[in-house]
Amino acid sequence: MSTTTTDTTTSTTTTDTTATGTAPAHTTAAGLDQLNPPTRLLMGPGPINADPRVTRAIASALTGQFDPWMTDTMNETMALYRSVFNTTNEQTFLVDGTSRAAIEAALVSLVAPGQKVLIAVMGRFGLLLKEICERVGATVITIERPWGTVFTASEIEEALRIHRPVLFATVQGDTATTMNQPLEGLGQLCHRYGALCYVDVTASIAGNTLLVDDWELDVVSAGLQKCLGGPSGSAPITISERAREVIEGRRHLEAGITDGSAGVGERIRSNYLDLAMLMDYWGPMRLNHHTESGPMLYAARECARLIDAEGIAQTVERHRLNGAAMAAGLQGLGLELFGDQHYRMNNVIGVKIPDGVPGDDLRAALLTDFAVEIGTSFGPLTGVVWRVGVMGYNARRDAVLTTLAALEAELHRFGHATTGSGVEAAMAYYDQSKTNEEQPA
Ligand SMILES: Cc1ncc(COP(=O)(O)O)c(C=O)c1O
Image (cartoon, helix red, strand yellow):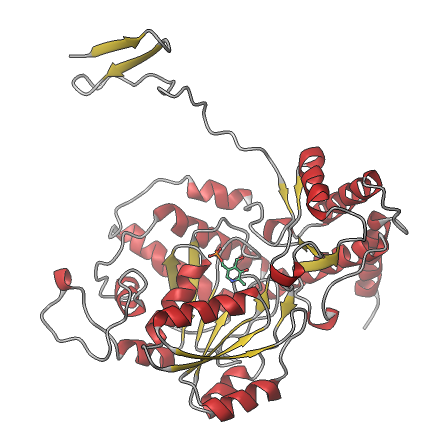
């Protein structure tokens, strides 16, 4: 039976199809149209436009979470991320959620209340690590650096020697400042002083060199929405054998699936973000935990597959080349870059907003007139610096040149006299790089 009710005040018709299975009406009671977001060129600090191959993968059919095809796909994804992280860590998988889900999973699983953590803070995302560790109930010690600079190895060593934490945590690329903290030898340093080493590489992975095993980094986590070329919502993580042992030392099975065995150590204070349970879920036991998100698994797999096909070193080089061309173009316009350029991430460029130019108004005009998005800044850099991202699918020559042309036009509209052409400067950089490549070594 089908009953139809007509609402005479709004002239919408609602059909009750429960009994017959007839197709429902196309308009909603609220008169909403089909979703149709505007097409933008996202050249901010993330998110960026996902690679169309990633968006297509998301639309693939769903399977049951323990369907052999699904578990095989999970295993393939683990293998692909080992190559993106440059690691052989067995425990390399996805945390469902945005990047901070994996950050929080790492910190809540590695650090018990009262334990000492040392955090190197050089920007907003170092402060995020501090905030999460405080919520975990850790004893938090920070060393800090002005935004736009990085730590030396001896500064970190000195703090490790004095404080002897169980965990040292930092960020490789702090998106808020555009700086890329050198990590070579960091894990070895931490291990010498008895600490594990955690690094957030959300903004830097695949755009900058990252050698998890060579640098002995214990837990490293990321997100898809920057140089990996996907949407936010899945957070790849890798865990060393040393860190796995610490996490296993706090393993407590969930009541509904336990075999009655006693838990060990201090119970991890989150269920969803419990890395011991996540390892059991992604491992051969396949112990039930959350329901893995099919679409985000497909997205993460396709992001890593594309990088694997390109070659991780080549992906990093693509970010270096296009990021440097953007930096050259911005300087060609007569703009001043922010921060110590020797340590800038390849993929995000901070540029000082010229005197007299209203930064947010110009960004809004760029979006309205050209559908180009660039980023604002946080904390001490608010109103002082724009951040321009060149990453993932958008680490391309045409995206760089379009952004520079649009920015130049808007600067002129806002009455700022540029000192040269950004597009020409970027093109000259590309040409010069090509000549250098062609020259015999
Ligand atoms: C370095 C860094 N860490 C963590 C995050 C948090 O990521 P999400 O918003 O995906 O949780 C961001 C986001 O921009 C980031 O740039």
